[in-house]
Amino acid sequence: MQHESVQNYYGKVLQSSADLQTNACCSPEDMPEYVKRVLSKVHDEVLMRYYGCGLVMPHVLKGARVLDLGCGAGRDVYALAQLVGPEGHVTGVDMTDEQLDVARAHQGWHAEQFGYQNTSFHKGFIEKLDQLPVEAGSFDVIVSNCVINLATDKEAVLRGAYGLLKAGGEMYFSDVYADRRVPAAMAADEVLYGECLSGALYWNDFLSFAKRAGFDDPRLVTQRELTIENPALEARVAPLRFNSSTYRLFKLEGLEPACEDYGQAVIYKGTIETAPHGFQLDDHHYMEAGKVFAVCGNTWKMLAETRHAEHFEFIGDFSKHYGIFEGCGGESPFERDAATGGALSCC
Figure 1 (tube, rainbow, N blue to C red):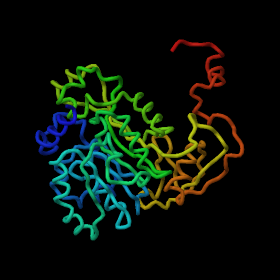
Figure 2 (spheres, rainbow, N blue to C red):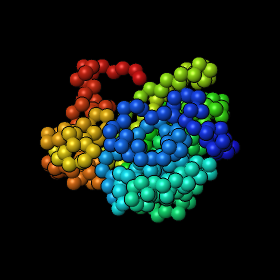
Figure 3 (cartoon, one colour):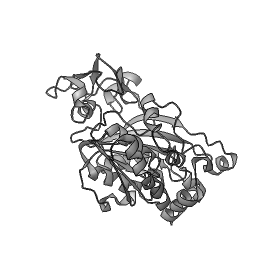
C-alpha cells in the first residue's frame, strides 16, 4: 500500500509546494549563482510542483549522462539538462502519472529555451531500476532529491543505482535522515510518510546499506537540521530529530574502509567553470585552486579515477604506505593509547 499512498499524496493531495505541511521538502535558500541561473529557465508549472530537500547539481557535468531518481515534475531534470549541455542527456524516472504528465508536457518548451532536446522520462519504481529501459553501467551520475526516504526498499534503490553507474561514476543525492530508527507505528502514518519524515532512514543504517551495495566510503557533502514548524506534526514525531543531508557515493574499485596515508597530494587547477576558486569534494575537503592539498588514498581515487581527473594535478602514488591518515584514526589502538594513556572506556 505504501506506493499507492505516496502516488496519491504527490499526485492528488499536493498540487504545489505550498500544500506541504512541513519544511522537510524544501531546498536551502543559499544556492550557488549558477544553479539560480539554470533554474530561471525552468517552466513555472514545473517549479511549482517541486518537493525536493537539497541541491543535486555537482560540478563537472558537461557531456554527462545523468539519471534522476524520483524526478517528479522534472525541475532537476531540466536544470541538469542545461549543465550537461547538448552532448549530454538527462533521464528522469518517477512512479506518479500526474507528476510525469507535467514533466512531459513541457519538454518541447524547454527544448526551445535551451536550443536542444536532451531529456527523457520513464514511469517506474526506483526500487526496481533493473526494469527500466536503460542499460546497466550507462550513467555517469545518478541524482535524487528527497525521494529515497519514500521508497519501500531503500537498500534495493542503492543496489540498483550501483548497477546503472559506469565505473568511476557517482550517486550524488539529498535525502532526509533520522537520528534513530523510526518506530513502525510512525512509519505507517501516511501524512508523515508523504512529508518525507517517517520513511527516513536512521543515518547509520544508510551508511551500512550504501557499503553493502558497493559504495565504499560514503562522503557527506552538506547537512542541515530540519525544523518541522508544524506543532501538530512535531508532537507526532517527537522525540525523533531529522536532518537533510547530501551524500556522494562513488563506484570505485579498491576503496579502503579507513583513510589510509600514502603520502599523496593533489593540486586543483581551478579549471571547473562553476568552481574557479576552489573545489569542495565533501564537508571536510575544500581544495583551494593552486594549493597543494594532502589526501588519503580514497580521496585520491575519487579525483583521479572519475570525471574530475582532468582538473587536478596528482603528486605521489600507492607505492609506500604510512598508516592511517593523520586525524582519521578512528579505532586505532595507537591513537587511543596516546589520548588515554592506554585506559579503556565503555562504549
